[in-house]
Image (cartoon, rainbow, N blue to C red; front, side):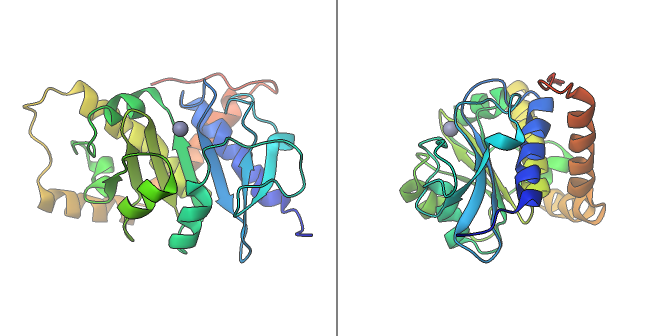
Length: 233
Ligand SMILES: [Zn+2]
């Protein structure tokens, strides 16, 4: 039997609470997972809790067939794309999916978000569109450099080389989606060369790592032992 990794369980919990602190977890649905190193397993939370409500006991080990390993509690039924992304993309260590309000509103456009801001430049030409949330759809769509997947009329997925990166990308993707939804159609989008330049600066500044630290601070400040109070921005 595979040994539990408490550090990874704690990370998933931090991811859930962090997303909740940004108002991304107030309903059922959405998932946060992290790969179990070198083994065909990953950690994810159970289905029947919101991100706000999640506790350590709700984070369970799951095999690549989607079955809980040491628990009789159930994850969401729509998690096939997690193990499938882990199999297809060895670089991906964490997968985050939510129905955040702005993410889901933007997904109704059935296209990647328009880019208007420096921190959003990382998503330029690295966001793909999947017709559905099963891996048959996502597998065909996801490229080797993609970091975000829009699922029309549903929500979005972000991936990362660590859980912190996947969660930070999710929070910024929500911000990016909000700009796309709220700025008028004629607003000029960022030119391709500017996107490439700003992406380089944002990465050099370690923006996403710092954002993950901020998300953790906000989650800690908003968590009163029972629930996270969302700081919706
Ligand atoms: Zn979903």
